[in-house]
Image (cartoon, rainbow over all chains, first blue to last red; front, side, top):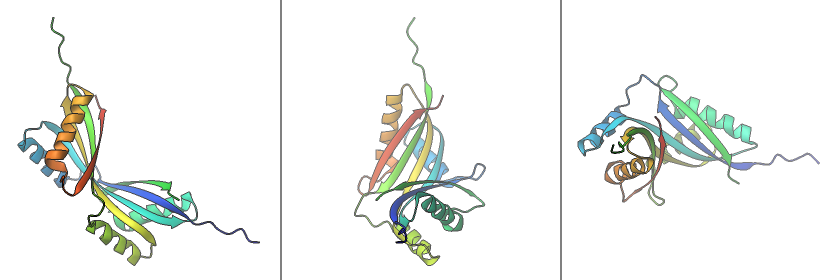
Length: 90
Length: 90
């Protein structure tokens, strides 16, 4: 009997952040707004998080799918850095 | 000699996410786009991350400043949940 491939559910967390040197306009806006309401802040930067539930045959497959999703769609290779965290959810 | 209050630098990480039940249009858009390029995904949700460098007298003060920033500006109490992580940076 061929050993069936067991599909499992994985939870992927992707954080996409501007590479150093790129102007973070949202960060600047937030810094200004915080300063306007009286806070003293040195630096404000922003990032985008995507949480994705997907099915895969293994943790490593889920990680490579997630990485591919970033390179193809979720992160702009020119201006963004991204980091991926994957954990099995079921 | 009065004990001087020592100001330290803290790094705050705030993650703002829609409360359950609110439509995550960015998540839906990302899900559609991932599906269009051939990925099978079950669920996609998004969140906003702010990273803030600030000065405070103590870790607890930095935490309460960060929490206040969320309640006053960074998170909309009606539709957003937020979580705060603070660590001393200097």
